[in-house]
Amino acid sequence: MAYLFHGTMFARKTKTLIDYYNECYHAGESVIALKPAIDNRYSTDEIVSHDGERIPATVISKDQERNLLDIVMNYSNIFIDEIQFFSQDIIKPIFQMEKAFNATVMCFGLDFDFKKNWFETTKELYMNPSIRKFHMRSRCAGEDCVNEATYSKKLDDSEEVFDVGGKDKYLPCCQFCWGLL
Ligand SMILES: [Zn+2]
Image: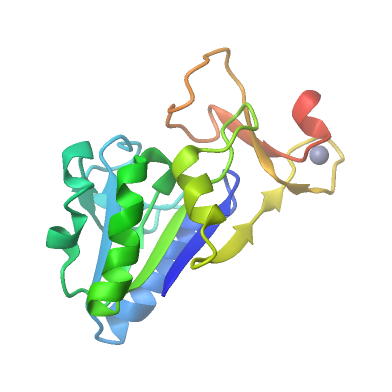
């Protein structure tokens, strides 16, 4: 089975990935976590949550995306972090893993960029009816706002969509506060 956990920044996506990873690991199941080469925020060979929890990860370069099956062959549980930073080449292998060796594949990532446009890879997975979807949300960072955040608002003036960052660069916000913050 393939799963997509999608949402804003600070929606506890990576923390959820780490929790599921540890659950599989402690149950004695084979497990591997993948991350895109672009994301060097905290560590190169680990996935690290905002609160500092960490697990080992295999870094996947652009060239390796098409041949992902060779890397993850026969793992029962495959976790993919920051799915929005992979190209759409990764989508076919995701469904092949499920079919070829009955893997559980869990993908985690942002759905929208800071301009409220879909990240294409997340969108293509989201639109596929064979994947199970979970919408993860955080609280809107707007003053006195109690809404759930559905977008990530960028704080600086850079126009770069593939710009890795944390609270220094982004705030989660609802559709109303997106235009105000
Ligand atoms: Zn708000």
